[in-house]
Length: 325
Image 1 (cartoon, rainbow, N blue to C red):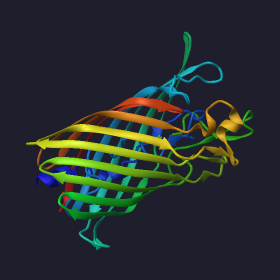
Image 2 (image 1 turned 90 degrees about the vertical axis):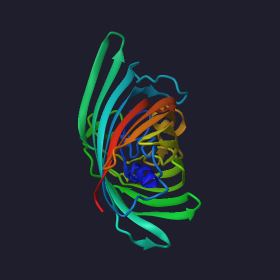
Image 3 (image 1 turned 135 degrees about the vertical axis):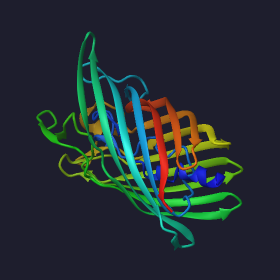
Image 4 (image 1 turned 135 degrees about the horizontal axis):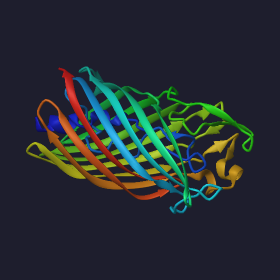
């Protein structure tokens, strides 16, 4: 039961693809398909016992846009940009009891919904853009987990993020092309997310490292290709009776340039460091409680460093419940 309660809290974390909003001139077009730190908190290398599991993760984030040096960025008109976002992600994880290549098999689907508020500050004058809508659906057709014995588990999988979120366009005379509107929530391109995770579970302890790649296709409407991303989510927790306490962290690094018509973004707009590559470092505490029939977990990830993107801190509150056995 102790091992089961640890794993239930996090197996679905692999497919909680809540994006974070980004200022278009600073980083990726629209939002990153995966929220930095989304899979922290559980044993991403292991699957729970056979069954069907429902999870809900609610998230609040706040911060300002940072430039390529990690300082507060401004628009070409001198405005500072602050943002507040909230989102909810509903997900289902199915573990049918199948064995594939010596590993236990699972499959999952997640659907996020996001609310955003962006404020442009220019001295005493402020303007605000509010928006909400569906973020792109994430489908994980194959999640595999090997029990390596002695408490070690190796997990891998592939999530496919569909181009079906809320997005619309307007023509920009200065850019000479169509661009996404300020109220866009989703991405009009595909993302493929392979991951490899290692978890050590023993005597209530959970040590997990989850490595994830975002491989993005081009938006054919805007001719914009968002660069690829690497994420490392780290978790160290201890279960004490019904409580789980621990420390979580994230490192996010964009590993290829954003490009428009084959040219790096910086070479075109002249505003940012070469390729506008995003970087994040986050760290914070975790507190969870196991009620027996379901579990609840709170996570806080404080932003230590950010470049070329929204310098956000994140608060998560979520629960997981088995709905069949």
